[in-house]
Image (cartoon, rainbow, N blue to C red; front, side):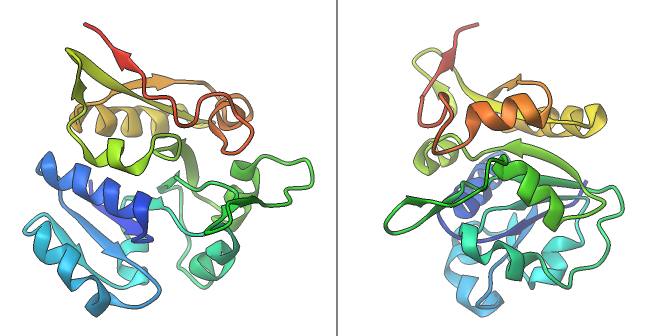
Length: 199
């Protein structure tokens, strides 16, 4: 299964590092072009390569982690998603002030899903601080917990398998209407908790 990453900020880079640590290949992209990602790609070679937004978006599974206000531009004009899996790793806040976005009563994942029509959206990787995503998930004698949620069971199975392959303990929170609310930052009770599952 090919993997693409749109967004090379804290979360996108942390996800790339987690993949590289587990020996999983992916293409990472940003709005500034592949050249701007040379340092990161060199660090994570041979597993992570820098590509265009279109190259990253053509993968079987695509993680999107972009500043909230830039999401519409980052996702516009891309080919049809055609049932491919898109991981929503975004939080409805604006750096550097971390001011909550106006969602008009909707969940951020609902708004995100509208931007990727035809995709099977799974919410994941947004609730842990980036340094914990990129760090060794084996912690304190157990495995660091990663929550995920979505409305498509098969897509969640794929993402859950990837989470397991990266060494985390995945917990399925159910549909986006439930899990998306629990892990949304700000507002949900689960973001920033560093939980460990002991075997």
